[in-house]
Structures are given as structure tokens and as C-alpha cells.
Image (spheres, rainbow, N blue to C red):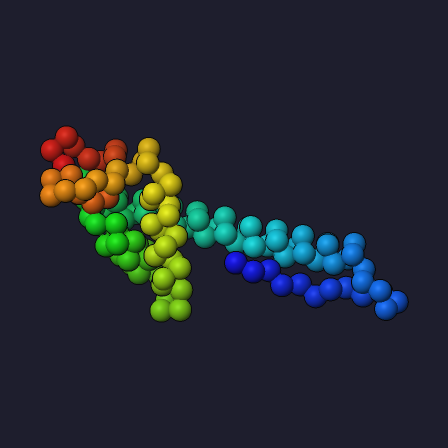
Length: 117
């Protein structure tokens, strides 16, 4: 991620205070957008598992379906959105189970899984 701001000048000199203020404003906007994006991702993943209670799916499948069907990803932001979904699932092991193998493989929401899945 990159943040770009114009360096403020005053009387031919770099105005460090004004430049810092511009950077701080740009950073705050980026943090707010990222927080909104992550909240949307959490809502999308939750909605996916609401629609598929008790089921497990491969992580790439969940990530792509959530990005495409629940977050309205576009071709321009699909890869980034898919990565955000996968990161969200991996970052919440108390909510999502990620298993391997035929009987317990894939991702499921722990609250919806039974011992047989």
C-alpha cells in the first residue's frame, strides 16, 4: 500500500508541519477505508456461512464465492478481495475451522459444524 501526498511549500521552503498534516489526513482516510473494507468482508463471510450452514468448502472456493457473490468484486479488485476474505478467515480461528482431509477438510463456521462434519 502506498500513500502519496504533495509536499507543502511556504516561501520556497518545505513546510514540514503542513506536509505532516496532509499525510496524517491521507493515512486516516486509508485506515477508515480499510476498516470499512474489513467490516464488509466479515459481513460477507458471515452471510456465506448463513446460506451454507454446517457445510465445509475449500478455502479458495469460499474466498472466491464470497468475493464474487457477497462483496460484488470486480475483475479489477477480485484478487485483492479474495485475499482479504482468506486473510479474514485465517485471522479468526475461534470462528472458522480450517481442516484438511476428506472428512474434515475445508473451511466451516465452527458454530454451525457438527462432530460428523
